[in-house]
Structure formats: structure tokens, C-alpha cells
Image 1 (tube, one colour):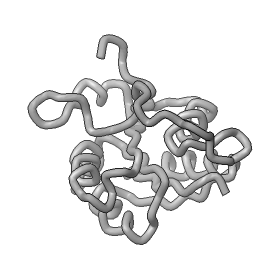
Image 2: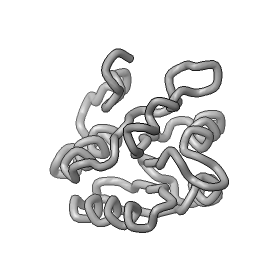
Image 3: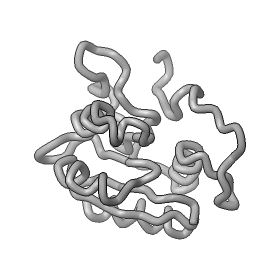
Image 4: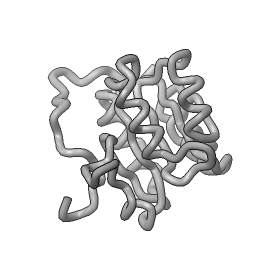
Length: 147
């Protein structure tokens, strides 16, 4: 098994698209419909990565990411925003700093881009084995130019 990913998106079609593409690559996938559900299930799921849509009802992706980062039990979990390009413009945290995420992937995306991002953030090679010496201090994947 390559790792467990918690996919959070209010669009069921997108959740299923991401789930199917990751399961085909050997990942275990758990889904949630919004940030509130994500925070309810994250401790039981114990994912290796959380992907978040930006615009969701009840609790959006950025606020969910901020809450995951502020909780000592979840702050170590990599977080990626998978959202539309136009939503990246508002992707700064409070006070205008960089968003509290490890990667941004724009919708629509190519399945191969998604898989590459998930492998990098979970530290897994194509054969599913952990990569030795994977650096945690790399530049975040998918940042818009000029950041």
C-alpha cells in the first residue's frame, strides 16, 4: 500500500475522480464532503496526506488547513489544495502570508499531475516504497509563478 489520502471536496464527481485515480496507483483513499467532515474524521483515518478543495460549504479549504496546522495531532500531515485557478488568488492565510499548505494543484488537472503530487507529498516512489532521504524542505509543488 502506498499510503492513505483523505480527499475533501464538496463535489462528489471530483471526489470520485481523485479517489479512482489514486486507488489505481495503490493508494487507500477516504473521502469527506467538506472541512467540518474532514476535521471530524481525520483523527480516525490517520492519513498520510489531506487534499482540500478551496471553496466548500461550512468550512473552506484554507480554514480547514489552518485548523489542521494548529492541532498538534495533525500539524505533521501534508496538505494540498486541489482547486480552480481563480481560487488561488485568495489562497493566502490570515495577514497575507503564504497559505498553510504544502502544494497547490489547479483544476482541471491531469491525473498524472495528481499522482506525482501525492507521491511527492507522501514520500512514496512509483513502486510504493518510501523514498530514502526525502527532503521535507523542498519548495511547495504548484505555487503560482512569482511566489
